[in-house]
Length: 168
Image 1 (cartoon, one colour):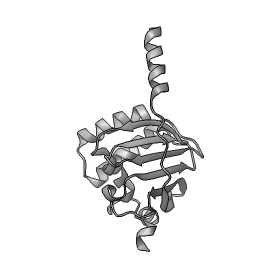
Image 2 (image 1 turned 90 degrees about the vertical axis):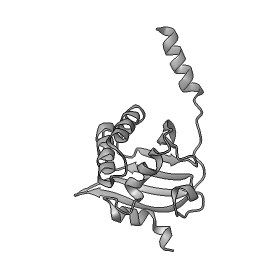
Image 3 (image 1 turned 180 degrees about the vertical axis):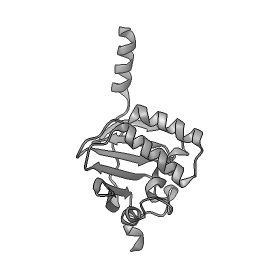
Image 4 (image 1 turned 90 degrees about the horizontal axis):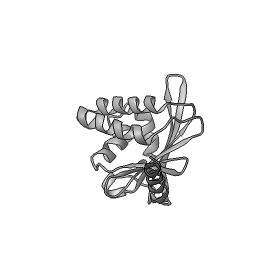
């Protein structure tokens, strides 16, 4: 048992703490649900523009929470948005939700959850600037970011704010 814990500690300690790249702001806005401000969102790319995932990767989406939200609430909302967009199968959604459950944790007011979409479409997650996990499925990345950036998002006002540089 002690050997197992030592192995886990070594794995966590040796896991590369990939630093977030220095990226430029594309746009930012606040997500509201009814009367509540849930989070501020910021979208960044290497040159501050966004034309597509492949062209602009790495792409960073940063959410700074205005209130406490449980991991399960955020995962449920994420699955709801994938269902709304209809671009992924139920099996994919459940697989990704299971993976997110091992990465994400409850967040409180002021916590910052960041998702960094890499060139290979994998996503690295950070909490308050510290790496917390990765999803290696290349299908996941664009469909996760589509929750905010797809033309059919359920938050079109926030999408417009995040893509503000595109209007320039």
